[in-house]
Image (cartoon, rainbow, N blue to C red; front, side, top):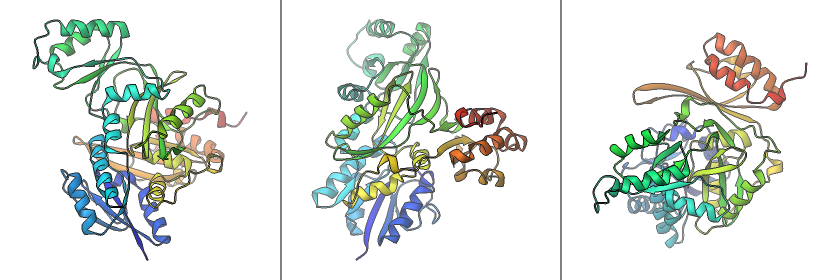
Length: 417
């Protein structure tokens, strides 16, 4: 008898290409059918080669559960972004599992804690993660909506002085970098306090270093850690992710790796922590955790490209009760790279030295962006580097600045002499 696995998705499905489609085809070869329940964008057969059902963007947990019941689907996976949809899917999980089914997602309460940046900090600290110092700023007091605390701004200024500048102001409940403000000094803080954000915010120490993230697949204390994704410099104003060069080259002897793995193992054992979890860090010799996303993320694709371990497929194995964490030593790791491009199509000379997983063109606030996701085998790195510094910028495929960043990713792989 053919079994059906549901994928519950918010945001366009194209961002999961090509790995979700590969997961669907692999499941079909195992006599498992897939069905997508999505709220945004367009679902093409290329992105999801199986049946799908469009839901209202404001759909509730009860309505999603009702759709699953109508289709007699009792097994599924949450792939929803951003955090508020991960919380919603936690409630879908509860309804499905109350009736004997299985939906892989963090429990709603776990997702809520990770969605709240202030509550996240104490949980991270309890499990051995290093976390930047921070101050909780009450939006009601900031905006004069509560009791008249005349000197509340003075309280905040004193707390921030103890942390030290620069700091970042972050909306307590938002994610994806939305609303983050870089505060360089006290004058900038005074300007912010004169026209504050409408809600609660976190004022956090701005750690200077390298921004990076780690996706973890976990269930019941068992876990698999995907490669670290390096996302550029941290310590200044936030940058737009699709203009960055990202890569997965990490030295085996990098300080802090053991402590990082121990903290992840501790967090993975927490009841209700389940599915794909993304930990975001600033690294300066130690990994300072700045955020936890209780869901798949923008780093899922590059993680899969680096390890060959398809997060979407692994989540379905958890849903069907068949999961065993991949053995890290048996995983074929290449160098995965995500970078901005100028050309509408990948050139043949790139495809000769790299696996091109994705070559996107998309619009954000009326502006067009192009982005590539590739994997390069170590044995082909020299050819890829020559393409970066030669044909690619000459023909306008990438900018000279992008070419310089890409060629600097793995200098240890350059041939001697």
